[in-house]
Length: 226
Image 1 (cartoon, rainbow, N blue to C red):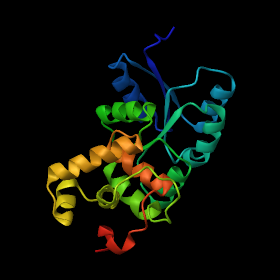
Image 2 (image 1 turned 180 degrees about the horizontal axis):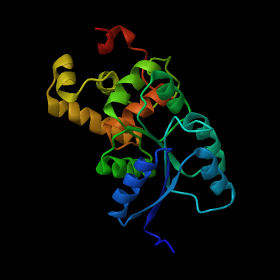
Image 3 (image 1 turned 30 degrees about the vertical axis):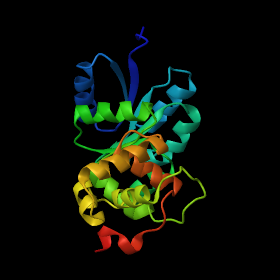
């Protein structure tokens, strides 16, 4: 029987060697228990059969039968409390856009680092989202520029400026130079903004900004277009 403190993780990936590597890596982390599947259909059936739902599910994209992108909605219906994290070789624009439109809880690229995977699990279980840096730049470009929604978190004008540049891909030193303020001031604005947004990291903040269209359209100042 699984100890109450142990997190259950499912991996859906058709590469047998990759599944074996993942099993070996997870075996060294007793706080996690891993169950693997070669395709989405048996994993979905396991959920329907009442097998204990995982805390987190790592999902490849290109699978035999139902694709990972197609499977997201089915998993959300079958095991709604499970956090779904994409773990794939693929960072194609359509995949990224569809995955985030379906509100995945993370997007990592192979080959993976075990610490990164554990960080993604922990972040998702705390309501955050861990995204590979290469994917994050594409997320901002693909779905970040939309009309603002009415939702108001009480952000100050300066916090909005800092978050806008963060969303657009700049790091703290670059933001400081852009706004002619110190790095410590940038950190202070971000700290205050994270509290208002109820997030704990840059990645979680950016994904929340994108999902909820909190920031105004800033394509005129988009560093990807410079």
